[in-house]
Amino acid sequence: MNQIENCPVCGHQQQELFMNVKDHMITQEMFKIVSCKKCGFHFTNPIPEKKDIGAYYKSEEYVSHSSSNKGFVNALYNKVRKITLKQKIRWIKRETSSDQLLDIGCGTGHFLKEAKESGFHGIGLEPDKEARDFAKRENDVIAFPLDDLYTLKENSVGAITLWHVLEHVYDLKKDILEYRRILKRDGVLFIAVPNMGSYDAQYYKEDWAAYDVPRHLYHFQKGDIDKFFCCNGFTLQKVIPMKFDSFYVSMLSEKYKSGNLLKAFVIGCISNFKARKYGYSSQVYVLKRE
Image (tube, rainbow, N blue to C red):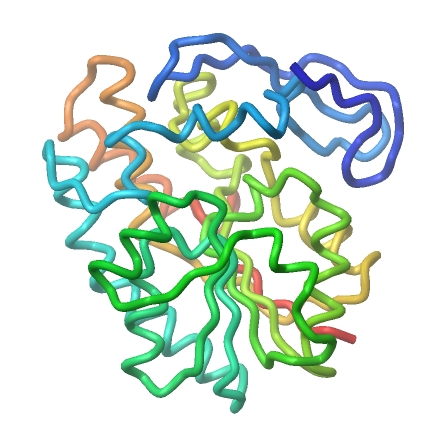
């Protein structure tokens, strides 16, 4: 395991335990989430070594890297994905006139396929070879290994998207500086991440599915995004809610607790209703390169 000595956001060394969380999805191992004593940022610590972390994604249950319809939750995820793909395209078209798009962590290529059909020239980066192979075979999307990020040309794309990817990025600060280098001036960065400040996160506590340790290395709130990106050459333009996520995350959380879907629906509704105070279960942050 890799023990993180310094806070990924501010570099401070002092941390305190926030919560012990189980890897409900695959290994059933316990992991610690800590908070920085200086800036309050939350992150999983320790985490698997970079060479070992891929093993924690090898499951049909990890639906973003598959198109499995096995089980009610997976089937619902795939139906909702068809709706949200079109939403994402509309969001991007509202924020930029560029048709040059980079999708980081493109998974099985569903978003890039939709983007291509909507007139974008998209490049995908994905660390998992099986997901890249699926993207090519099923969605006619050619995705490249994640390390190709460091070889892309400076000022080459108008928009970069990370749809529930930033929480997985192993070299966080290094890669954010790369996003800024690759974006054109006034280029737009779209970051979708779970919000650990949401009502459903507070309700489910250690059983909140969006903690998803150890795959999720970091656990964000709006203030974390604002502070971190503003210190690295971006300005936060707007926050867009992902209203479906409260229901999906609540269903997974109830599954882990051996609960029921009706309760998940109720919690999802309450979470969206209380979002003015707590924020939504997941949120998209639209950031512009300075």
